[in-house]
View 1: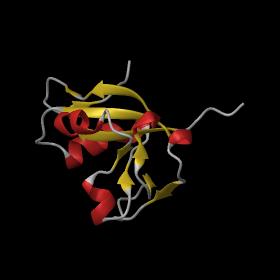
View 2: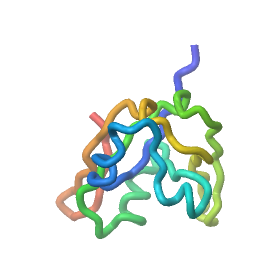
View 3: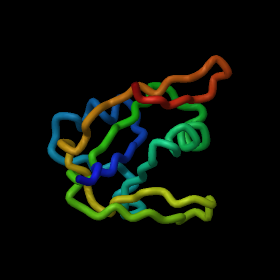
View 4: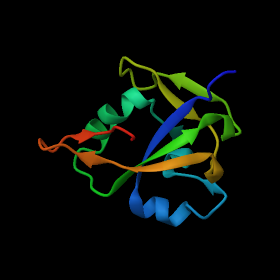
Length: 115
């Protein structure tokens, strides 16, 4: 039996509160870039510190990719030197298996470690 692929998506808490009781999650990137940005477990901390360094009230959605109803495409679209998972479709909210608070360490850098 294969373990389902788990993806992670960083989201502002207010945005999650607005969509958590809906059927589909359609972030702005879906309209502007055509896909939703995700990270692997190993990429979440780096993504948070690079993209969201000044942000507060962030959550990390833990997603069962097998419930996304779309293919996961790993690609390096921004020449970052690593491939990130993307899904070119809205995300069914039922695919969200857990929601984690994104916390900062004493040095004010984000550290993600789902417990």
